[in-house]
Image (cartoon, rainbow, N blue to C red; front, side, top):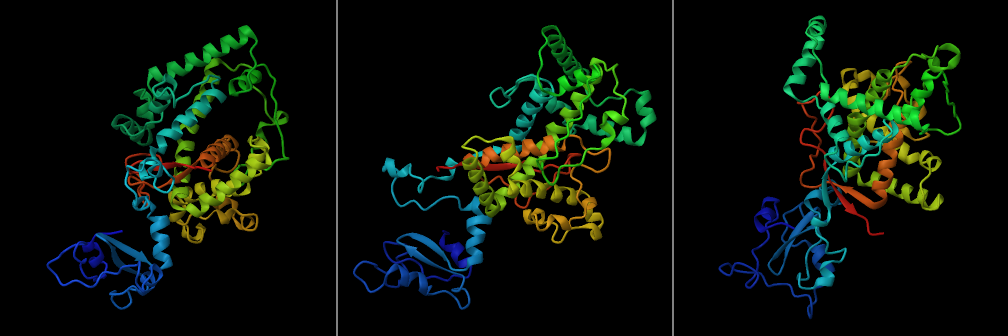
Length: 444
């Protein structure tokens, strides 16, 4: 719907409303009365009377009492408003007063306030922080319930490279590494490093004293220190197109396992795992949420796969069921491709994909993924120095979107920036004005 001046600006020169409906000082056309007349709503919607030549094929305007109404007839305009510009047209028209309490709470009447607006970067960093806390550091943290817990705040400080002091240190490291070493410049504060060092020391001490075995990263490193090195090979389940092939340099046959690993060595590995997973994985989740919000058809197809998977596994998600979700893997694989291409392949158009700015999970279907040159798709790097956490990152990404789409629809809101603009104030890829989206609870 639009006000009369807006209708005119669109080229829709409708006469002003009739007496009781609007301005009484002008000559009015006879109002259309549905009941008892020869006209019906279908006649009104097909005529588009009063519209300029060529416009009536796309839209026309009319009045329902004092309400101006814009009627869309063009399928492209309908798609633009109901899908792409949904954040500006979130509600149904109100035709019953708020005093009708039962009807005002119905699904049809629910207003945009029923959509919870959230900043996804904040939500996803809390999620990744909690995941890393339990898998790498062996502690349980709930950063959504305890917003200011120490573990999350330390991680947020460690991955914040937008401050002036850290920016200057980065320049110093790149331009004068020797001088930086002499001056003993450090990116991370003593408070942060001491916190994680003490956390690891305390955890190892308790486990050794009480013979606690917990299947996490600390346990694996403690076992490696004892010489119990295990290379777990499982080639049965396909873990996803984006998963990198681990190098065989880690096989026991061609590597000597260090048995002098100190607690600081273990802390260093856990910390780098944290730094890589805290912000990087959360950022990729944010970009994926954006694509799902602006591509509702993709989101709906993925949600159908979520429901089908739940039905197959009796309502309880399993590891095997998650990895068998083909469209989920296509969607998760498509987002890193677009991000990486924005960062690198635009410099080399010959290596680019057709229509590179389009989010298209179909590129990674079984029929098409064989055509992808592996060295033009490197979300986790290639070779022996690739990211050892690719399986982990993809797994936690798939899990979070599985449960979000099971219960919510991700929709654009007023604060959503479309198209998304990349921030110039950060070394990492992030949105200029944040990742703001709406979560609309599903009623099914």
